[in-house]
Length: 367
Image 1 (tube, rainbow, N blue to C red):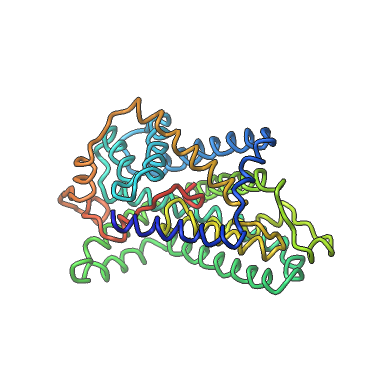
Image 2 (cartoon, rainbow, N blue to C red; image 1 turned 45 degrees about the vertical axis):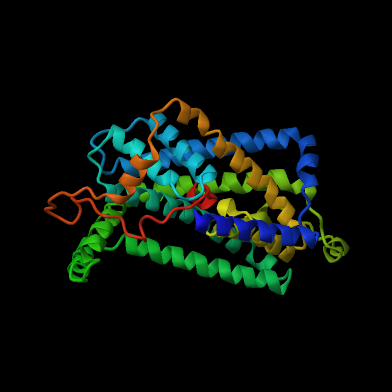
């Protein structure tokens, strides 16, 4: 609780600092109401994002489920998780709540796999974002490096991030023989060896179907494209260009947005500040300024408001579902389901700090 309070204090301190510098103008939110069609388009795209992201998670869960899972149920559970990630102060994670719901319809899945499924869902969402970023950077590279040294620097960062993603995919798809050699090494590590082996086993189980993983990354690219278009649709009418950009008549387009908006999404996906408040404002203020738009922090407010609003609507499926007490959620997050594994993949685990790390918002990279 104290940790969350400290993060919230820092978040609002950053917003206040930007406000004092004249970098945030909340009156734009009211002005945006005249663009009702833009908001309607944004709401439908975010809702479509929810549908596709829930389907992606369902495909991951079914790797080890006893039978086909109900899409409607997974959609409801995912939305409830987004609700709690947004409104609760980081004590009870929405991730554990939605995993409890999944456990209620299929208790054959171990806790290790359930946690791994959430982690992989977020990683695949991140991959989709990085693919969109990488493709846009390649297409627009020659044009963008000529804009300014700041943009040139951003393009180099984009390539390095994209290369890291490709390396991760290579690790995910390594041959079974190499996996076995890795298990022999990790199993000998004191204290953490058994847990690492179980987690890696579930991780590579997901990677066994290359076609499925690539299909899920494609779905992630679609959801991240929707996120970028939503951001652009709501913000574009309020771009304030610097005098230099106006003099040069350099007006940025949606194609340009695909080369830097994903970087802002990466920042708010890191669970440092609640809902990306403060960190998102700083990130988009810098990113937009690199392209000659001076009010990036204010523009972020549009996307922040629409995502919070959609997440809070998760109260609807929550009110029609079983309620879990805080004690039940905490017991699920702390206890270990034990089995006698005959192989690294047939076991459950005690969650480590690495696997139970949670966020306080739904991030676009998780969509």
